[in-house]
Image (cartoon, rainbow, N blue to C red; front, side, top):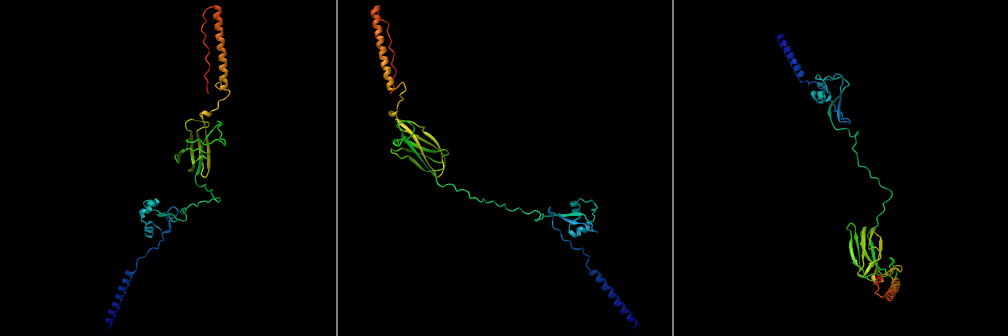
Length: 278
């Protein structure tokens, strides 16, 4: 009986020891505290502040950053010596969006005063070639348009170009829908006319405006000579009379010399009268 009790006690002791060993093996290994990766700073660096009892190996286990990388990023010695309070760079990330906000669109300032609207449409240019009867270079109401002449309107940049023949009457030749810009205007009278004004003109045309330009010309048989010129009719008559008197005086002196000296007087060359210009 005593022997059975000893065997039972021994068996219970063995079971207790076996269960203790199994329990000891089943315990999980000690774990390090969880580490939350800090937010990158404005420059993008991720900083870890060294705590008491930290080593490079412990920081590697906490952050997952290898010891060699810690040494390179922070320029540590071969022993990876660190001290509490040190700020270690454990990575590079994107900068904080709150520190460097993305610039937005620049607002456009709207003027309170409205811009003036340009005058729409084109211009009208009228050219008149008139018969300047009195030759004063100014058109009178009675001076009509010269027929069979020509007027033209040409843009300096090629935006418009047109030429037309003049028609007898009182109405000028008008060019419609002329674009804005600089233009050269010209007029040409038919054969038998001479210009009394300049025959070309430079004009700057603005949209929505009307322009009237006059060019004058005079018939050749209507040209009035200046009474003070030596070629006028009155001056020619006086010169003719004086020439006749001189001729008679020359003939008289010749006859007188012949009768006195009894020989042929030297030949006298009468003065040539001036040309008469009509």
